[in-house]
Length: 128
Image (cartoon, rainbow, N blue to C red; front, side):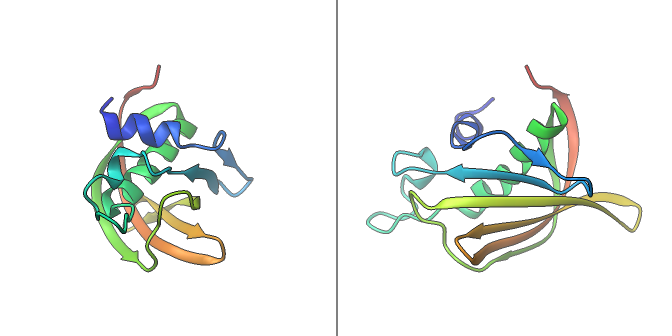
């Protein structure tokens, strides 16, 4: 597993939960030392969009017990920057669109939506 994925996993504030509808939920805290902030941007660090996407990929993989890979970003809206030391709530619901299983994710900081994502994922291998 690459360094960013390891650090995303380490930023988790506990396990992934799921409700009866299949909604997955996880909380993350990326500190100033998180590698993804390096150079993005000096003096005003912002969590890169790809890290927000990979956080959803990691969350689904953890819940399923099978490492996931990103196949496609069907839709993405980044509405609020995520800064160091802000708790990020990730909620993700599987749904079928045109015969494809997609993951509809909402990332929030406090009461504000940081990002809204619709991702296609595929299994790669079992997690250790």
